[in-house]
Image (tube, rainbow, N blue to C red):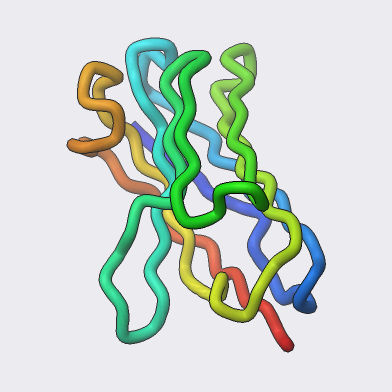
Length: 117
């Protein structure tokens, strides 16, 4: 199983980024895909989760949307109105959909998001 996150970068506050996570080696529809982030000096936190048509957005509620394209085995995280506090490494992870991102079995390497003020 491989999860490849991409789309991070340096953005100004108020800008937007779209992160992508391509999953391979698993049956996409059997898994939840979660976006987690870890800021310097902070614990990793769940940012968004999608299981089929059910999704959850936590800290970025109102500014972020998560979507998936099962034909491409890809999950997207669209983040708008970026804030400096969104600066973190963003990881995508996969876990059986029954756990709804509470238990993740596979992790990808992160993508750095840096938001300048």
